[in-house]
Length: 357
Image 1 (cartoon, rainbow, N blue to C red):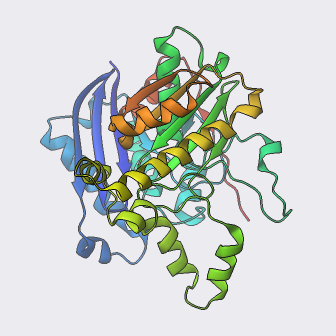
Image 2 (tube, rainbow, N blue to C red):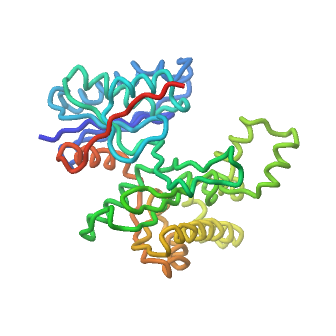
Image 3 (cartoon, rainbow, N blue to C red):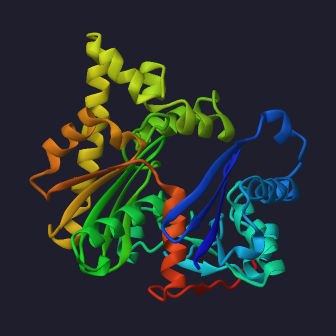
């Protein structure tokens, strides 16, 4: 039996699923209103509330906790970690409860998983956590010694897409050079080589997206921040939630944009093509790292369902390598498959050691 509980807490929802092997028995996304979240002073105070939701969801779907083999949770904002599985232990629980990198709802995933698994006498894991950073050291260097590039991005979905492709073509993930692009509310472009995420161009320096600004002209950013109009909080909100398609076209939904284009809106078509061109240019940026030897380019995430967007990108990058499209994010399935690889001995879970500053 390989019955896995999957826990994926987000800022306004908690996603819960149970898998029996590769088969999903149920999945549920429980939304949390702003009023409910506002009752809690700190994120960690939501622990009991969210844990109870997980247990109640299992009860409603007639899943007995004692039938579980293991639990897999979305990794929180730990210090930089390697890709793959980590067993949730006391050090990880301490780190996420008392000294995370930042407050984020995903921090609760491992805490809830550990609380449930400890009582059941089974193991719990995180997989491809948010802070995976395997970037090659030479790619971290910038023009200022005080600033280094970081390898954070949509690692869970991108690595899952890369491993799915490797399995489909009958090759080992570690033997392929792949460029994988996650296209959702934010966009990440990643290079996978030698079994690692060797580089990520994330949404603070890469393409603009439905909500995010991506890379911006530096001197103009300095002028903007010196104007007195923005403090750090308002500037971050601008570039993370009010930029990209939202700023240009007033929507973060690419389906709305495609309807505008179908209705003859030339400006919408121009902006949409500009976003696609941004993605294509950033894909090309990854090629020198492996001297142009790219086996495949993979487009994934919610926007990968958009045929016109993917066709535009493919038209501009297919000279580098063939293009494969996997629509959707598939986070719950990705977590489940990661857990299964550990249970089946195909992958060994790493041990997290807390970092005390």
